[in-house]
Amino acid sequence: MRASPHALLAALLPLTLAAMVAACGSDDSAPPGSNPGAAGASQGGGGAGGGAAGAAASAGNGAAGAIGVPGTFCGLTTAAPAPALIAVPEGFCVRQYSATLETTPFVPRVIRIADDGDVFITAPAKATAGGAQGGKGAILVFPDDDHDGRADSQFVFAGGEPFDGSDCFAHDADPTDLACIHGLALHGGHVYFTRWNDVRRFTRAPGERKAKGASELVANLGMPMTAAEQAGYRYTHTIDVTKSGQMFATRGRFDTFSCKLDELTKGAVLGFSVAGPLPAATTVVADGFRNPMYVRCDAHDACYANELTGDSWQSIGGREKLVRVNNPTPGHYGYPCCVGPNVVAYAGGDCSKVDAELLSFPLGDTPFGLDFAPSTWPAPFAGAIFVAKHGTNGAWENADVVAVPTDPASGAPKGPETPFTRGFGRGEGTINGRPADVAFHPDGRLFLIDDTSGLILWIAPMDLKTPEGW
Image 1 (tube, rainbow, N blue to C red):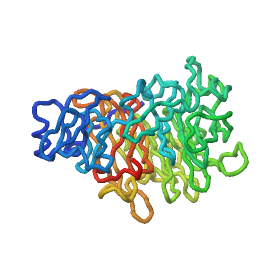
Image 2 (spheres, helix red, strand yellow; image 1 turned 90 degrees about the vertical axis):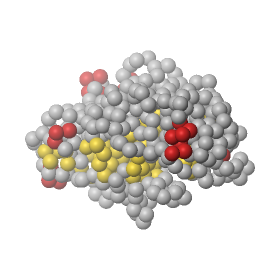
Image 3 (cartoon, rainbow, N blue to C red; image 1 turned 180 degrees about the vertical axis):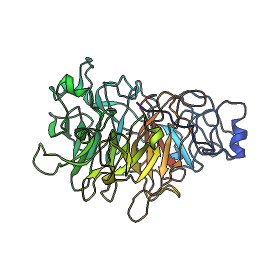
């Protein structure tokens, strides 16, 4: 659970005069180029049409400039409007990918996109610590075969059995039981996923939307397998893999309020190879974590994770951390003994040897999923690390997407963050939603999932062209 340390970032994505005029008479507002949804439109609403710059367009299209020219993603007149309160910067559009589905993917927690364009999402049945619940306990696939900018259907690739309420470790006894699924990765013709204590994989050929055959055990994650021990751990592991087949898996734990040396290795990132014999032996590549989340590897094979640190550490300098997990030597981040280098949380540990994070976020912002923008995106977002912030506990403040600039040569984050979306959160002026993960499509669009509302959205630069054949 996350604390609520500070107020929402101000002056986010200002409206131009034209958009203000277009928004008159409505309680909702959005910057031009941001969202074709009419002010006050419900999520999943339809009605696409052309818009003229500087004026409100026809029904289903609000702010000026929201519709791009033919041949671009933003120019797809068949694409579904996103909720009107969702706003993105000038020069971008946002659409709802899941608008026409009969059922929404409740608790979409992790998203990955296959090279063939199919959108894969894990939806755990077990409730998460953040309160999201009601998922299918499955890997879901959302294709867009007719290229209209919205998902045609929802396939259950694997899983989907009802959750019986028992502990996650009990579900591991049946390899087909995905009640506690969470992490997801696509690599080398396989679909990898996590459960309580294991990483498993299915073989997949391009275009396949239903798993064929049984899953294969890839690695065990060292989780306790008894009711007495499992209470201190989280099942919400995440995974990613480098081009060479080195996989990394996160292992989170819950709060503790004293420094004991055996506690330092509970929250960790494990590394193992998926290119050799399986199941693979694991090695701890970084430890001293409370809850490392959403590990992700970039084009340079540098892998990062967001560490969600002690909830009660506001007064001693606590913050959320972006860290690199595959360093030349194992990393040590100090939880629960140390807030950071030379900063003690609870007496008993040596904080002089604790590694520093690459970038910090305010405590309680709860940075979740991340991915890396292509170099073709417009400045200042080209090559940036996009981060989905889940927001503070209860109020969901700062629940939006931000962009972190990177060094063009190395891809390393150099901060500070730049707000990219507005409209998530709880209460008036929001959609009552929380971003959980982001992923860039091979065609250049940014996909975003919300584990509270069940939304799947995509965002594109206004001039991003559709592939040939669309």
